Length: 370
Image (cartoon, rainbow, N blue to C red):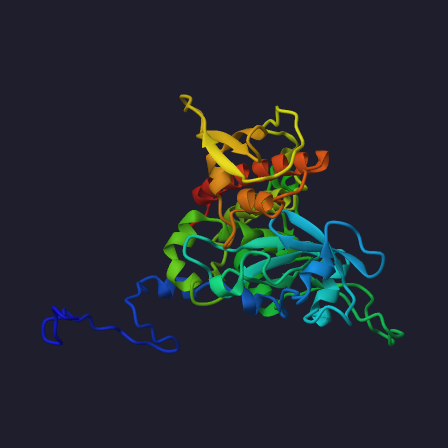
């Protein structure tokens, strides 16, 4: 300030547009293409912020509660238990979260994404408000249930369905069916084997969720539309062809299964835990191993001075989901605790899932046109 004046400063004129009046230069050249897609918050009829107990210390635990116990999706790859007593949980979001107490899936999407650290994930149950990051870091995601269940507190009236229904805006779904010339079946989902010999004539809610999930994990999509992803819920391009839709959907389905640790692939460990000891986590650190020709960069993740997970890909150790690096945070959250046998296996499954996620993201770009 001492060396410049209003006359000497090189000013840059901003192009201010509604509804956002940014005080920094933004690259919105791709806005026309981006706006052609459907907005996720428009596709899903209802959604909600995650649960906030205001008393995590007493209401969330790795052990089951004697009363009101429910499985709780607390952080990426970190499933806990919650005492889901609505009198104790301050922000229980029950009106919508009740749908996640039954067989269901949900997308986790932030309203605003951190550049390069996108908090896109999936859940199968009650989910914490800070699952993918704290709100202050713009990483906190909202839960978008795939299905809605009817209220069961009273007797159903005549003609009222007891079945779940897709939590989807049928106007948008109908646009997709018309464009692809295929039908939508609310309770049917296509598996890969059904269309290896020919494209199917229908798709279901899970197929659509998987397609969206695949798109959201495309590096090209994230880079091309990063300015828009920092502003509001993501828009997803309408599929340009059946082939593209089902291929992206297939990759998205694989990502979903990996992230829920339901894929058989997570059992094929790529790491080792070779040294016996007390298994107490002290200060997790990553130590690079000498590079091998043709092999991805790996290292050792030490949990204490003598014990470590061997041959951990560096890409998995550094991988971000929202504001968190799960391979690091999962261990840091267990500092001072001894890892059980199940914990050791769980961590190795996480490493497989994160590594394969990075590989699948590259494959998605090969079939997705954005």
